[in-house]
Image 1 (cartoon, rainbow, N blue to C red):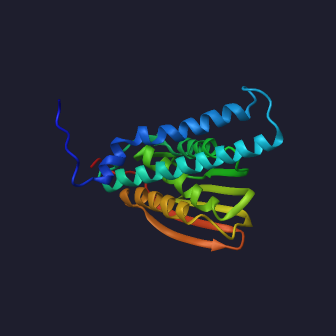
Image 2: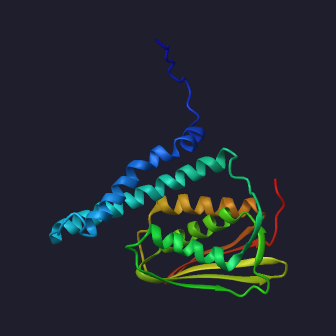
Image 3: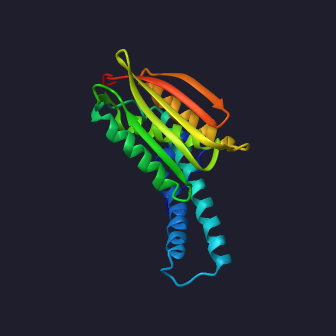
Length: 222
């Protein structure tokens, strides 16, 4: 019989990174089966049942968001997320970032304005990290408004850099989630900083929040 040894110390960053799939599985089940029931595939629902299942679905999705962010931060802190640059088309990645956010938050009603006015739209950056930074900052600004609302995602030229504006507009949410702000703000800022970018502005407005930052058009491999 094998001898078991209890760990005297746990490397939490490593544990979260390695066990990411298993940690997410229960929440994916909660979200998936709730979605099936809400679609009516398992039979008709009463109004009360639909309301309860919607609460379960939204809560599961929120917890999965938090867990995914914590795992992402663990990988960042563990040095696993250094930029791996490749050439990509910026407008495509901007659109994919918004689509990713909308898939993760299907019940939150936001209209999006996505605009890239760059003369040259090809970049040489880490495509995954730039997409994830945009998703994180969209989540950040979305916390400050109540749906239905609007979110602007704009990229423009600034000398030899890219200049981004992400802004939410709508009725002000007076109780944004501190957890979401901490997690998503950290991830977005970490990925921008890793690329040599700079946060220019994080400002609360009467109708939402504005984030502005710059990025180089190209970075070298680590």
